Amino acid sequence: MPQPIRITIANLPRPYASSSASKSPRVIMVPANPLLYVQDGFTVELYMSGLTSPRYLIYTPTNDILVSESSANRISCLVDNNRDGYPDQRLTFADSSNGLNYPFGMAFFNGSFYVG
Image (cartoon, rainbow, N blue to C red):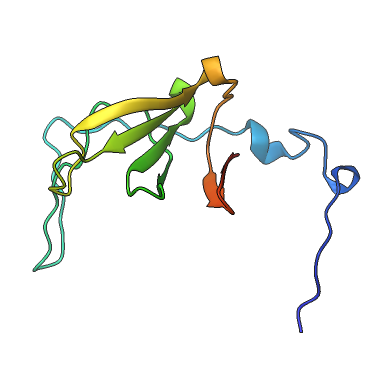
């Protein structure tokens, strides 16, 4: 049977202690005429544009979608007003005015919302 794991602040390494924390990803430019290849029977469609480097998506309890945009220091809420399966509106759910600081992961648990 699995045993519970207890992690305390004292058990954690200092921020940026590992060398991987200082390594940024290499950005590759999108070609002028990009092509996407998909398996037969599948299609690719644009779902939403105008987001700044989206990192993580999560459905809200009301079926809207939250998107963390770390480089924009923002969490956007994509709202599908007409229920056609595509967002009609992008709202700012949280940003630096709420104390947000480079959001990445998000979770809903026991009626609360968490950002990492």
